[in-house]
Image (cartoon, rainbow, N blue to C red; front, side, top):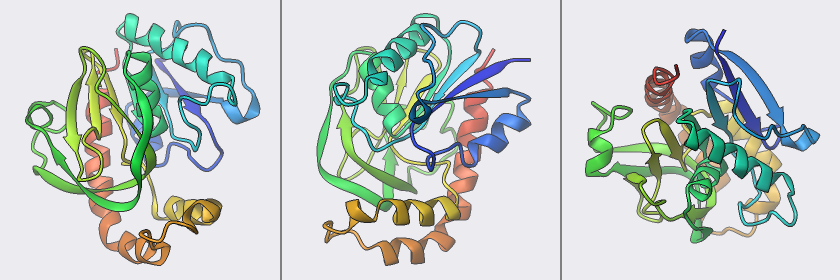
Amino acid sequence: MRKVLVIQHVPHEGLGTIGGSLREAGLKTEFLKTYENARMPADIKGYSALIVMGGPMGVYEDDIYPFIKKELRLIESALKGDTPVLGVCLGSQMLAKAAGARVYKGKAKEIGWYSTSLTESGRADRLFTGFPDEFTVFQWHGDTFDVPPGGVNLASSELFPHQAIRVGRRSYGFQFHLEVTEEMISGWIGVNADELRPLKAIDPARIIKETPERIKTLHRYGGTVVSRFLRLVD
C-alpha cells in the first residue's frame, strides 16, 4: 500500500478533513510528531507523498527547534525526487524555504475568515480548476514567504500576496487552512488565547460566530483541492 508521511508539529494541528480524503484515496498514513521528538528520516524514501502541517514556530527559529533543519532536508529530498509535498501554513513556509525562498514575519497577523483571490496561474492550476476567482478561507498565521525560484504564486489576499504556491510539478503550499473543522477552530482559539489577547483587530467571538455559515463551503473547497492533490500521488 502507498504510504504518506504526515509531519505534525503540535497536538492540536492535525489532519482535520485531510484524513478523510487520504482514506478515500486508499493511502496509508504514517505520522511523525515533532513534539514527541520523533526521529526525522534523512530522506523521503519509502513514502509516496509528504504532508507537512501547521504550528506556531517560525521556519527561522531553528536555534529553538532543532528539528527544523532536518525537516527542511527531508522536504528538499522530496522536491529532488519529485515526490508530492502538501504544506499547510507552517508547512507551506517550510516548503518555500526548502525550495530556496525567504520566510519572514508579515506586517500583521491574519487570523480568522478572510477572502483570497486566485492569480492567473492559480485559475489555470489543476487543483483550482472551476473555483471562483475569489473565495473565503480560514487563516491563522503571521509569517509569510517569497515565491521560490521556479515556483508559481497561485493565490493572494489583501494582507499577504503569497497565499498559495506550486513548486515543481507536484508540490503545493497553502498559507490558509482548508482542513479545519468547527471543533478545531474553537480549540485553537482556546489554546492560543495568549496570542489573541493583544490583537485588538481580531475578535475571537466574531470568528466563532462566522464559522458555522462558512465551514461547509470551506470543506467543499478543501475536499476538492486535497482530492486533486492526492491524484498526483503515484
